[in-house]
Amino acid sequence: MSFACAEFIDVAKQLLADHGENQPALRTAAGRAYYALYGTIRARVIERHGDCFGDRGMHKRAFRACQDSSDARLKELGKLLESLEKLRVQSDYTYNCAVSRREVLAAIPKAEYGLKLVENLQLTATQLLFDHISG
Image (cartoon, rainbow, N blue to C red):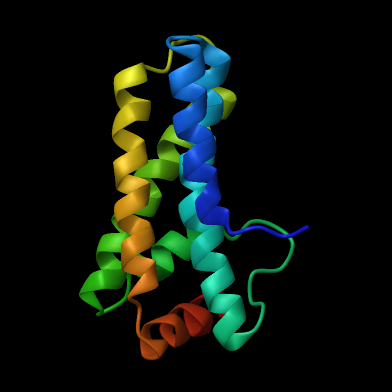
C-alpha cells in the first residue's frame, strides 16, 4: 500500500508526543521530518517528469539542484532540505552526542513549510530539478 511521504510528519509528531526526550525517538523523528520533505520532492519530480533519482546517492544532488536554481522557491527549498538532511545524518550516525528535542521540534515546522513550497512548485521548477538531477 502506497502513502504520501508527507504523512511522515505525523509520525514524527507522534514520536515526540509519546516519547519525550528518548534519544531513539528523537533521532527517528528527525529522520521522518527529513524524509517527509525529500520524499515529497522526489515524488513530485517523478510524477511530472519521470524517475531521475535512481537507487541511491541523490540526496545531496537534490538539495544542490534546488540551491543552484535561479528560482527563489527552489533555493529556499534547497536550504530547508540541506538543514533537515544535516540533522538526519547527525541523528543516524553520530551516537556520541545527544540530539536535542528543541532541534527536532524545530525541524518539523521547517519540513511542513517545505511541503507547502513543493505543493506550489510550477512545472518549470520541477523540470529544472529533473534536468539538474539527471545531469
